[in-house]
Structures are given as structure tokens and as C-alpha cells.
Image (cartoon, rainbow, N blue to C red):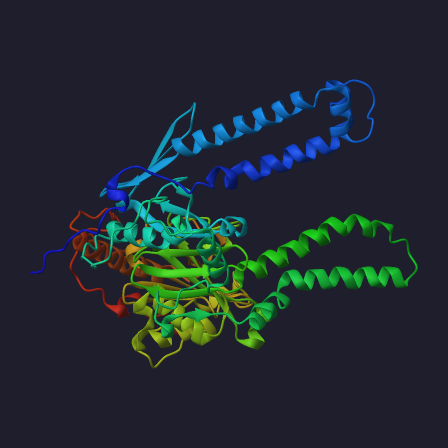
Length: 541
């Protein structure tokens, strides 16, 4: 039996400091801009207050003529030194350390704060490189931890150190303590830091970082990387509901103008158009250079043009997956994927990138991404279920395990989508199929189900129907299915409960800890795939 050795702790487990440019990046630039704005707009009042008399022209000339230039220079230098001292003290008081149990951050001058992220609670690690920070060779690292508002942020670190630091944290968090023979991670700002070289070397390194690809080819095998072409991304934005709305408004304005009516109110829509243009710009810049790939640390999602971000999901952190297709994408056979995850990191402005695993892709891209997120769904035994859940309606016999469709009387509640409504149990994953105009396929790992419940309103009770809901962590994916047969839903409830309990007990056993699933009594019984497919009366088929 090979002895496993834990990786070297960053900085030997001691307290480390952030990037020296952190105070400037976290508020110094904004402060300088505000001071410049105030001086430019309050110039005359300042001269009248400190010098006396009206503005005589050039400020320096006026101060020199009145003999106040020395005092003015002293005040400016004093304020500058005071600001530098405050920023320097703030930087020195903001430290972090990483040990075998947690990542800890201390900050504050007058009011001290101490935050920590336990390694066994880390759900993912995101790295963001804002454009201005990239010019300084800095990056922001954010650890998402299970719980509300439980993120721990290290802003900013040296850009050359964050990838290695994330690798070491994930090694500690996932208990993969095998010795890799790599040199210990260097403390920020130390003698071994890359920025300790000469200025020419630093400038060359900044240029290399700005021009480098978002995903290092050495981090993941090329065959596991899924990318998006810019043309497909542009097409998906044009074939969207927002674009149709904009076109409808433009056509309405043209018609009103052609009829000779007053269109002065159009100027009131300028802010709305500017906001819409900003939405498209943000959408494009966030999704450009998108890539998702399998790495030794987990699934890595990267994106961004000027501000680049990447997020790594360790194994077992995905609670629900949704494959969906808007109506306008159907002629192109484009699909998108989003997930629910515990304590997800923001990964930049907006929440879309943190939960979007595929902004737009083909069926082949969906198959590859699902294989990265849930490898069990990529097997030949379940591939037909995935395809049936994406495009088919009703029953698709001939494959053994099949979707259980909604009964015919479900058309009273879902007149258009009742044929699409159905559920299936594929191994230890529950699949929910729904939506006619907006096609959706939801996959929920049984081990991530927090609770299951059946709901029945007055009309559903009269039709002997009910709604099945699988509760997971909060997110954009809704694991709920309505207009189901009541008797069949009870059978599905029992089968999914046994699957969730068995999967949770197996996972907890692999970690050597007691499980917390309370859906049913623990059992080692194998869950029969056919148990979730009750026979239906001939009239309901």
C-alpha cells in the first residue's frame, strides 16, 4: 500500500499578503478619478475659498502670484502621503493563510474581520482576471462554500500564482494527498516571485498573459474541450426572444413614423435602447472564448474577452442539470445547459456564467458536456434516454427503460405539452422531460436530492393527477413535473426515495462518514429500473 503524502502548504501554512497593487485595484483608481472630477468641477470655488478673489486664469500661476504655491504643494504632498500610508496599512493588515483545515482571511484596520472557508465545505473555486487587474498581473480568486453568503475572496493575487494555488486548495479539499513531486508554491512577493525579475521581463510577461489563450492547452486534453464558435454565438443572440422584442419595437416605430404621427416620445426610449445594447455587449464578451473541459481538479469552465474568468467544479458539486432549447433555436438544433450548484461563485458580473455550462451548442456538444458533468449519462445504455428526453414525445418503446408519460387526461392541465411530460430513472439519476415550445430535460443525481414531495390541487385531484417535485439547492433549474398520474407518481416517489437513499449511503460510505439523507430507511436493495414504470389503463395511453 502506497503511502499518500499531502501537498506542500502554500507559504508553509503561514500568513501571506495579497498583490501589492490590491489597494489601487480595490478603490485607489476610483478614488483618484473622483478627486480629479471634484477638482475640475469645483475649481473656481476652491480658488475663491483658499486664495480669495475670482479665478484669475491658471491655478498654478495664481497661487505663485499670491505666494501660496509652497503651501499648496505641501498640502498635496501631505494628502498623497496620507493616502499612500492608508493604502499600505490596509494592504499589510489584509492577509490570508491555507492550512490542512481551512482557508482563512483577515482584513480591516479599525474593524477587524476574520473569515474562513473549511476545505471540506468548498463547492468550487473561481478565478477572475479583470482587464485593469491583468495590466498589473493580478487576479481575483473566490472560494464558494456551502451556505448562504459563505464566499471567501482573495482579491488580488499574482496572476502567475492563482492557478497553482487553486490546484493546491482542491488537492487538500478533495483529500487527494498523493505527492506529485512539484515544487512548493511560492509566497506572494517573495524572492522567487516572477515579478521579482527586471522591468523588461515583467512587461514581456504582461504581454504574454494578455495574449495567452483562456485555457492552457496543458491543463486538459484537447478531445475533452468543448468550445463555441463566434458565429454560432451571434446567431443564438439574434434568434432570441429579446431580439424579436427589439425588432417588434423598431417596426412599430417605423409604422408610426410612416403615418406622420408625432414620434417625440421616441427619445424617451433611448435609455432603454442603450441598456439593450449593453446587454448584448455583455452577453457576447462574457461568452466569447468559452470553454469547458475535464481537468484533474474537476470540470473547468472558462470564458471572457477582456475580463477573463474560469471556474472549477470539484466532483460531486452539481445538484441538477437542465438541457433546454428555445423555439427559435429548433431549426438550427441548438441547445444550452445550465445547472444548480451549492454556494456557487459569482465569477464576475452577473450570475449567468456561474451556472451556465453551455451557452449554445449542438447535440454532440450536449453529449460531451453531459459526459463531463455526469459521466453516468454518457454511457450507451442511457444515451437513448437523453435523446428521447430532448426531442421525443410520449412513449418510446424498445429500449428497456423508458420515460413514463403523463396520462391522456393530463391534457386538461397541459393541453399542448402533456405528451412531452414524462420521467425516468437512469441508474442513479432522475430524468424529467417537459416543455413543448421550450423543450427541457432535467437530470437530478439521486444523491443530491434533498427532499421529494407530491402536490395535488383541487382540479388535479378531480382528474386524479399530481405534481412531483425534487428539491435541490436554489438555482435556475426547476426539478418539477406536473399533470402526472397519481398512482404512478406514488410508485415513482418510492423508487426515487430508495435510489436517493442508496446513492447517499454509498457516497457517505466512500467518505467514511454517516449520511444525512432522510428520504427513507437505508437499504442495500437494488433499485429496479422497471419499478418506476407503472402500467397504465388502456384509456390513458
